[in-house]
Length: 104
Image 1 (cartoon, rainbow, N blue to C red):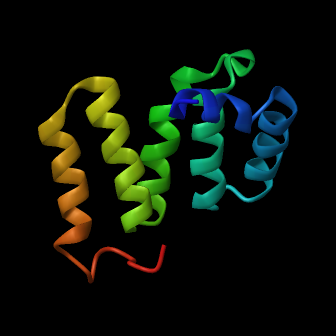
Image 2: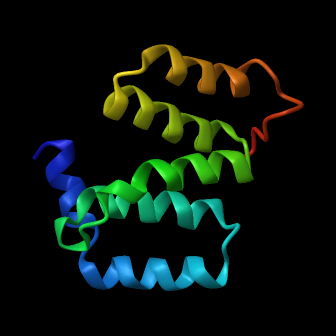
């Protein structure tokens, strides 16, 4: 199975609603933001694909880290075909350790 198929198996609409509820209670939890964005990408029933970019961006702005930069940069490159902006986002973390939390 390819990656898209595996992603499609990871989240159903109940999972999405649970993640949304958890995020509303913990609005600064970047792990929840990332999971929900991936959930939106993988669950057609959620019909929230348009929220993905903002979730990845908010996670990155809330807690700049290698993880959040990678997710946001990948989304910008693949969704918007903006390679330069994606690299800029990732490099802002990989070159400035003071600015970017490297633990997660």
